[in-house]
Amino acid sequence: MDIRDFMKGNFVVLDGGMGTLLQAAGLQPGELPERWNVSRPEEIVRIQKSYYDAGSNVVLANTFGANGLKFDDGELELLINAAIANAKRARRERRRLGKVRRVGYRAAGQAP
Image (cartoon, rainbow, N blue to C red; front, side, top):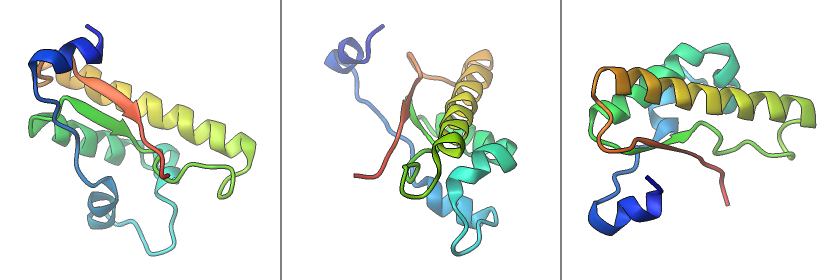
């Protein structure tokens, strides 16, 4: 089902503040959270699964600050690909348990 069709008859519940939960998990001041997609993927997936458990049907990939000003092209591509893989894994693992309500969309997030 396309998300636009889903929205016609359902409320869309987005995930919460990834950065806040990463800080609670040990992200240090000045540390770039997007690097956790590669260095601590289990933590990223755990947080994303917790959003599904709380009732979210859209979970963003951990890409909020992923841009060419912070990362060179090679690292940027690596981090974004890892972020998408983590989000897919969280959705897949929660679908198996029946925790993903309706469709379970994932989306890439990026700062304006």
